[in-house]
Image 1 (cartoon, rainbow, N blue to C red):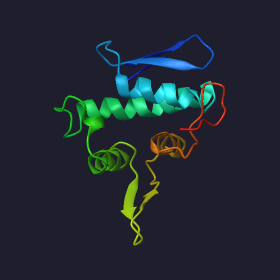
Image 2 (image 1 turned 30 degrees about the vertical axis):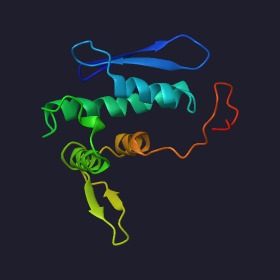
Image 3 (image 1 turned 135 degrees about the vertical axis):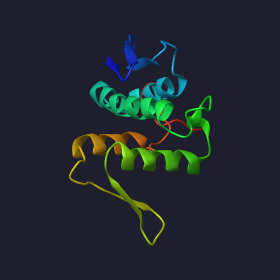
Image 4 (image 1 turned 30 degrees about the horizontal axis):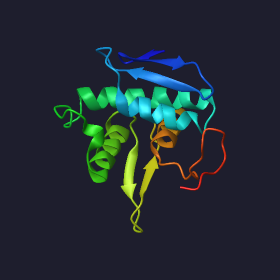
Length: 142
């Protein structure tokens, strides 16, 4: 599967897993780790859909973001990552992002927004609230 110079391949095994490569065919560790984690909890179609959304974000992050000069902008502080996601939502997805008076952010679609893609992207970047599980799907003790 190819998007924005990135591509991924599904590996074979008990759990669906993926190897994600950047535009220069180097293994993209954060996306590969995400796909491995997500594959344990979501269907392969969901993981594939999330990867398409995240690949576009990472491609933008490398090319357009002020973080592009950093070697791994994804491993920055939570606030820095949040700011880059908000910039991506505003500039690329044409959304309006506003802070609620209780401290969380609201994302509004505009006329130029692809609502389906925006919802998919937001689902992919939100941290899942999932109990730790072993490979068989049982809740682990640690």
